[in-house]
Image (cartoon, one colour):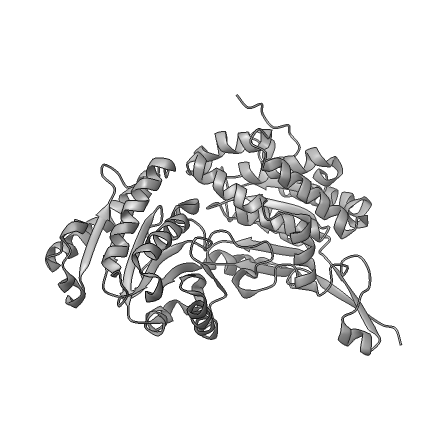
Length: 473
C-alpha cells in the first residue's frame, strides 16, 4: 500500500476543492519569487547534477516514486505495468549529466551559454559574445496520452532555471506529480519553484490567469487546442506548441531475408507495443518493399505472431469501451474487405498470387479480445490506426511511392522508422529529409528519442530562450 503524497502542489489537494483565478495567480507569484531567490542563481551543471541524480533514483527497482507510478499509474493511463516501466526507463536513462550538457551545447552553441557570456568562433572574430536566459515563469499545458512529453518539458524548464506551472489534464496528473515530488525530495528548494494543478481543458478563467502570468507557454495537444491557446495569449508571451503528428515505418527489401526478417519484426513490435502506440512517435503503418526475399504477407504474418507473444509477456491493459468498440468496428470493415477479395486470414494459406490482387486485404487479430490487430492492405494510402496495438502493413515498390501517398499528411509526419542496411538507410534518410521528415531513426527506437532530439524539427531549448548580445569592441 503506497502512502498518499504530501500536499506540496495544488494537484495534490482534494479534487473537490475549487480552484480560482486568484489561487492560480498567487501560485505563479510564489514560484516566481522562489525561482528568483534560489534557482536562477544556480549554474547549469548544478541543475544537471540534480536531474541526473533523480533519474538514477527512478531507475532503481525499489524506488518509492517508481513503485507508486507502476501501481497507480497503470489504472490512470491504461497501460500495463511492463509497458509503463519500459517507457519510464527509456526516458530516465537519457537524463545523464553528459546528455544534459550535450543538449545545452547542441541547442545554444556552448554548454556555458546559460551561465556566462561566451562566444563561438565567428563571434570571437567580431568581438562579440552572448548569454541565453530562460523564461522567468514557464507554463506547460500538458496532454494526457503519455507522460513522457510532460516530464521532458519539466526537465527543459529546470535546465533553463525557470519557475514552472504545469497544467495537467483532469484525472491524469499522477506521473507529473510523482516526478515533481521526487525533485522536491532531492532538493526542497527546487520543489518550491514548481507548481502543478489539474482542471478541465478550456476552463477560461483559470487559463487566462495562468497565461497572463507566464513569460512563455508550451502546449501539447490537438491543432484546434493549440489555435485556441494561441488566440488567448498576451501578444508578448512566447508560445511553443506541439500539435497532431503521426509516424510510420519503412522496411527496405534488403532486410527481408529469413534471418533479418525476424529481427525487423521484433523491432517493429517494440515500436507498436511501446506506450501502446499512444503519442506522436508510434507507427500507424509499416510500408514494405514488395520485391524482397520475404513478402509483405510474410512480414505481416510474422508481426502478428510476435505481437501475440508480446501480449503474453507485456499485456496491453484494458481499454475504455469506446476505444475497444472502435477497434471492433474497424476490424469488421477489413474482415468484409478480406472476404470480398477472397483472401484468408490464415498465414499458412497465402498464395503468391495475392501480390497481383488490387486492393487485396488480410486480417490477423487476437482471439477473444482487441489486444492486437495487423491489417495487410495493398491500398498504399495512409490511414490512421485505432492505436492500442493496431497496425497497417502496406506494400510499396519504393520510398517515393510511400511519400507520394503520404503527401496529404506531409505537415503532420513526425518520425519515420527505417529498416535497411547501412548504405541503403543513408540513401533513404536523404530522400525522407528532402521531403521534410523531421526525425528518422531505426525501427525499434521510434518511441525512444534521445534527450537532445529536435521535436517536430525544432530545437528544444533554443525555442524557449531569449538572448543578450555583448559587443565588447
